[in-house]
Image (cartoon, rainbow, N blue to C red; front, side, top):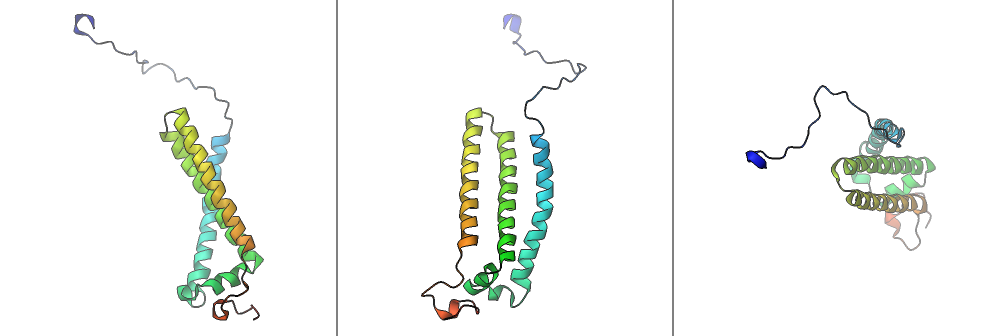
Length: 154
């Protein structure tokens, strides 16, 4: 601060060549980027198929009740369809939030904590969702007959 001038950090000359930093990450970010595009396309098909069957076929939204879900999930094709939709949506969304965390969390500790919480949330939702899809009982004992699917015997 001598003579009224402030200390200024040295800025690289705009004409200096760009030097790429070496990283050890490999192609993970490239594969992540490609996955986001591919999973987005597959998710569009899965989601619009899901919406079409649930809202347009039959009586529409008025038909969605326990019996409707029971009838759908008694078919292995719909179990796999909904499982794919769950897993792809969760991986796609988690990957997107991971990218946002990498972009905006400046401290390593903050980034690590946020990614750990994200992984925990992902795991809980995927495990519970998968269990619900595959352990769902369309014909539970002691259920009122008017709530059960038509294929359940009394």
